[in-house]
Image (cartoon, rainbow, N blue to C red; front, side, top):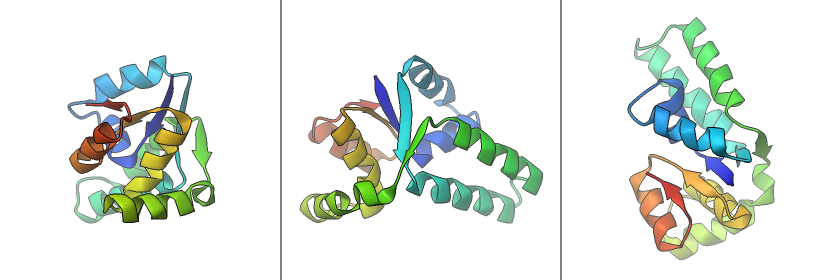
Length: 132
């Protein structure tokens, strides 16, 4: 099984929140974990916000960034599914950011791991397997 991990689920894992163990179990049984290059900047942005808000120290944020990077076996260049994501965003009236994960999961026949409820519902509707 191939897994597409989005940034919301990765943050859940690296901060060891409620669904971290469940998500780790799925990742540990996966043949490969992939994601869009978008993941990298989304993770950095979330960690920056946590440092700015005083929830994390800079050194901790940098360690968490490395943990998030290490969850992924392969980063897929945005250019590989950018056009498809645009067209699906228009067709499905949903964020282009999310469609980068969505189209990657669909294209690879992968399981999508996300905490984004709207994305999860859309993926289920479009017959993409998700982890809840």
